[in-house]
Length: 367
Image (cartoon, rainbow, N blue to C red):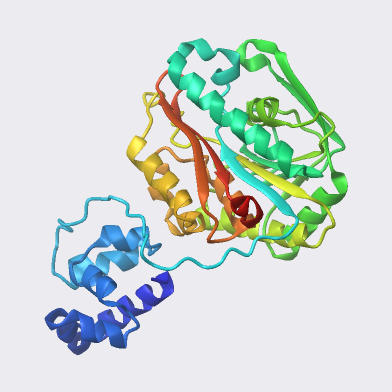
């Protein structure tokens, strides 16, 4: 069910007490008048905030159905659980024809800097996922690769998202006692500047940076996945310390999508980060398997873009502060694209729930 239809139905009930009374007496026919099917009428009548929140409604709207519609003053029926909608029809994917690859993976430095700290079998399964993804990227044969990561050790002038506009980038894992694990890649200034200009034209904030060192956010996944050393790379950096907006990250990706469509280039995008990953003192080493599973099931169901409808706390509370990196990628490909989960491993020593997911773009899905 479309989230806007749900929201408008709830607001209509809240504004009209007679309508609400009739709805409480017999939800289905009143819900039908408001554009709801029987299932979602029942969800609202039961005050099921968890289902409504999962459908992308804000908490200010969903709390009406429990505390005000059902007079559940303590909001006792809501558990904060998340539900994957598998009944509503998916839209047909409309992926740019020249977007040839889209995927997400973790960028945990331990996996290449000191893999021995985690269980050997789990590391092997995760590495197998990266190997499969590398093969997919090689087959896609892109002209340029976009990679999203969050800011770790770089210094930028603003706290906005950053697009790398340089002719090349280099860096190493010296902060993790492995200066030998270095990487140098080419840039693509022309496409990068076009993206900067498009974002600004939409009134969104973005910083361009021609020079900054690569860190593990780019080095770790690129060392495992880069199909050839001369493939140009455009790094895109989020800075969650200033701006954490799931919706904004998806919109940022939607703007970049337009630039990709306008170019005669085969483009690939790789999102990096978590899933669940806390750097908070006292919380490092935890993985939220339940919420990670919810995100992965949303991706598998083709509903990844819907995750951007969640309010920020829902992600932050579950250690998903890097997920906006994935939402940029999801905004680029649009709704209806299903993900194929190659690997998921919660690892205490390296500190999170690590995943490798290939988004099955229409051409690759057919293959």
